[in-house]
Length: 142
Image (cartoon, rainbow, N blue to C red; front, side, top):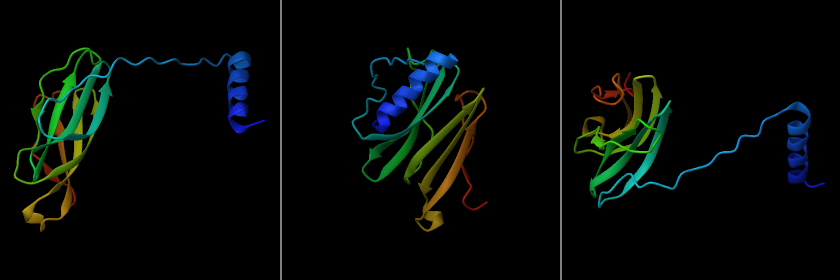
């Protein structure tokens, strides 16, 4: 018996004899969330109930990338307006987002001249579901 066939057989046995429920997921059609002429990339998503939080980087010009934020409060049916979280002349990259209740936590890497043009890790948070954000904190130097 092939390995895949064995795995399928085990799952079916578990379903039949133990009452294991098989979850079936359906996905909506893809939705375009960014409409900028520049490249949008490196998205990170956090879900808290029906609220979906998304961050990504966008290039305002060739040498600069900034982090943007967008949310849906109805499970992705509609989306609010995007907002820019970072705003500096340096590159911000690789955002990672976590959400819990009204709190959102964002970590990302950034290159700052004050760091000798090396990449450091920065942190920001929102305590009001993404309405406002803290100042960035360089956690690489903590």
